Length: 237
Image (cartoon, rainbow, N blue to C red; front, side, top):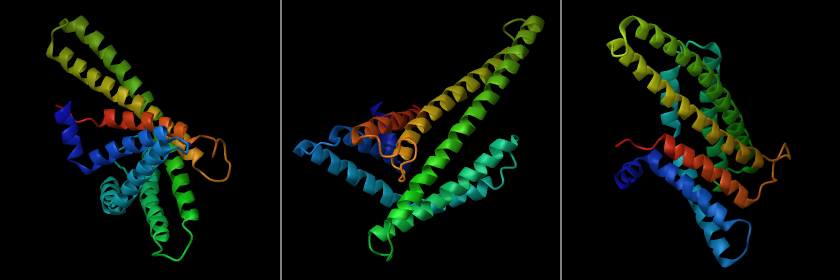
């Protein structure tokens, strides 16, 4: 456990995920109170979030490289998934640009208000989360179909060769892999839904439940999302 945590902390993405969890834990503890302990935890939460935002200034090239590798997604057979992937890739790339403009405006490097850009960034995040949920649901449906097909093949193979053939073992390995992917998609949906609750809450304009959550409630949703994210990306032994 300790070695895996160290392994995660040695990477940029790993540190970012741990800081993300720390941000939301401090947000939960800090809450909306004004006592010294509330204030201290809210300061730490704000500083961790600011650190993550600053580090994202260097994510553009990595995102661009990923988008160029994916291209038009010709390897993806499902046209709906391909379209959603292209859409989310473009959205993520644009998100960084918008967030950077907001950051530069806050630092007075650009003579403009940052508020519209922060609002646009949160809205883009919310839209991308909806797209991710739809993608995960479609992938779950396809995963279930593949599992049904494999089980049929397994039954036919057992009838013909018995239960110890090489073919049986290969089919079981494929089924185990599909089960792992299925669980990952379930966790991704939980993660994205928790983030979506916060994203809409932080979207200005009074849409849906915008502005209705307390700081502690947002902290809870963020903790759930961060735990799902850490679990899904926890280093192997």
